[in-house]
Image 1: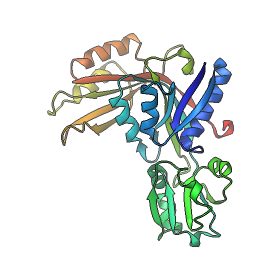
Image 2: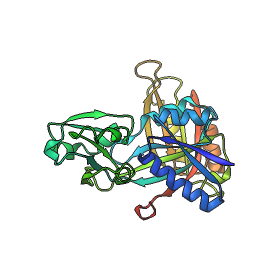
Image 3: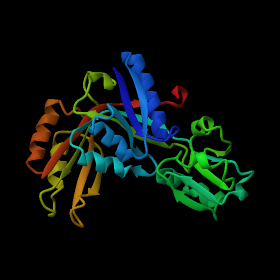
Length: 292
């Protein structure tokens, strides 16, 4: 069987880059063959898996500069059938791609909102008067650059090679230690081959809503993990979208959901929450620049 892997397209995005790495790792580890399936948005990538149109989605969840990718979190909350199988950490190096003869000829810059934000300081310094236009992905605008010679896009050097376009500036992200965490997501628990190891997971991600917005409502859930010595590596709130001031909470824990200690914590946690969802237990697979 050939696995269908959904990701944010068009080809050349960082999501595709992470997916290519994952496919190479999967092929070497299990011999499984896979085909990449680009989708216009992150949400559509996840819905493709939920709807059975793809087996796996590789989606960004957090950037070291700009924080969480809220579309991923919100969509996973909505789609109960999806589970995280693996995390991938990809180094991000942005380039300015354009057919303009020089920087001072550029009037418009396109890219995904995350990429634009990660290069905000550079843009203010070197292109302070240009029009900044957000797009669905870092590669969406690349096909228009040859016709629009005063337009530029922020994307990867790999994207420039794929579309045979010139790079005017490299390494334009404001912070050199820029990386994005991606989740490999499938329906249910999925096949053990999707993961980097079958011997326990290093992280568990969950999401919860509280029964009431009262003083100390979040304290009890946090105390449960603290008392059992389970470390939280991330916690973030998102609106429930039901009414102003109501929030969901997403948590990453440095523990395996199947361990007895975590099972005990989750059982107690369920008594203090309105809805509790285990998004997945997984390991983290770093992607070095050398392997890309």
